[in-house]
Amino acid sequence: MMKDPAISIQDLYVSYYGNEAVKGVSLSVNTGNLVGIIGPNGAGKSTFLKAMLNLIPKDKGDVKVMGRTIKEVRKNIAYVPQRNDIDWDFPITVLDAVLIGTYPHLKLFRRPKKKDKEWAIECLQRVGMEEFSKRQIGELSGGQQQRVFLARALAQKADLFFLDEPFVGVDVSSEETIVKILKELCRQGKTVIVVHHDLSKANDYFNQLILLNKELISFGTVEEVFKPEVIAKAYKGQFAFMNEIGVSL
Amino acid sequence: MAFIEAVMQYGFLQKALLTSVMVGIICGVIGCFIILRGMALMGDAISHAVLPGVAISYMLGVNFFFGAVISGVITALAIGFVSQNSRIKHDTSIGIMFTAAFASGILIITMLKSSTDLYHILFGNVLAVRTSDMWITFGISLVVIAAVYLFYKELLVTSFDETMGAAYGLPVRFIHYFLMTLLTMVTVASLQTVGIILVVAMLITPAAAAYLLTERLWVMIFLAAGIGVVSSIVGLYFSFTYNLASGATIVIAATAIFVLVFLFSPKHGLIWKGLKVKKKRASLV
Image: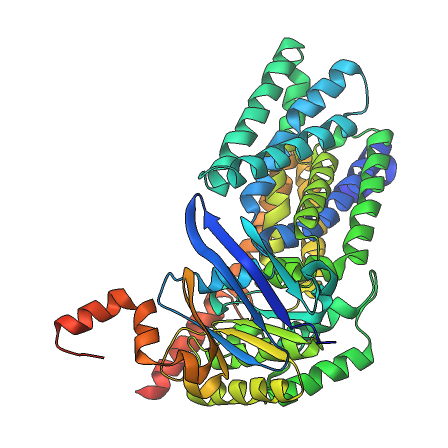
């Protein structure tokens, strides 16, 4: 029997007050892939990610994770929000923020124990942030903050990781650390889905790409998607301008 | 000194003191979550929204606790309904709904022709706390503290990163309304001490002062409760000694603490921040 794909999406539609943001996307991602979601501004990349996880209401469509509904596998999902969705003045230290990653597996009324704390510190070490464990999260740089949130996701011991624009406002060395860890996760058989803003490094970072502009423009390996004529289809607005100034693809 | 003797001597003053101390604690505790979730206006709204419930309870001769909780929760639901089902923003929806509830409350009370009651509900009269009120406040305090203790994890996650909570399966909408219910109960407990109009100050001022003093949520909760207690005692002292409205003196005491913290907080205080900047600039000359 064939193994269930990590994620399979059938005919997903999302709209905001009648304006369609995601139109009829169907695809399925196999386990162990590092998948980038790319597309121009306003292409509905984050919306697609959130709708996939049932964090916002969808108009139509069916999402299965490892052959089951999202509801049944929630504890197996780690989600890292966009950095500007977080209140960085919140009274919480780096270690406590990572410790939140252990909450999904703690029973109601239970507090994290010593072994949970040790695990959180281990996760901080993996992202190279253990020396900052007592800092308040707002005292960190953008890249450090993103590494802490990755550590929190690691602490969740999930099989699927969803990251929304993890490289925005992040320094080069943090970006390298994060990519290295995401690649490691895939080698361990985890599935990682990343909304990515910038085309430039998409071909280095991911092995599969979802190219989105409200509709699914293309989905496949990096070699299949990362072709000028395919990319141009998604970015037609922007490329028309480039043609005008004499750049041709 | 005379105040302490009076507390020893008069039962009404003991009840007033105990009740306002309990109110100081629970307002501080719930207030932390209110300000961290950016819901200060919601706190103000819910406190005003209990008025029609209180009025109807008086009319029916039942304990005002039940009516207040019902009208508070209905208003919270109505606010959510309007902002989720139209383009109207949350704060606008709050403004519409709580003033509507408050106005209906005033109308009902005026029809009952009992303006003294209205005055006491609006501004509080801690020296008139009855034994039964004190016990209700005690019961509410137990429920609120137990709820925050038991659901601390869930309250922390949903206040800090609600989307993450939803992603791993927390019922975030339910938790929001659960917190609104706790908020309504705290408001009801505060009616006698500070009154409807000033409850919001007891919710946000001690919590805001605590927020400037620490980087840990649980420390913030304890500090806010402590500041709430000190404000209550100091306020009650001035209220009793100089025959002033208790709600007003308690709130002014809380504000005084806030101003001190705002100026002198070791990490976020205006004075130390200014000194640090000055020192840094001087070192660069």
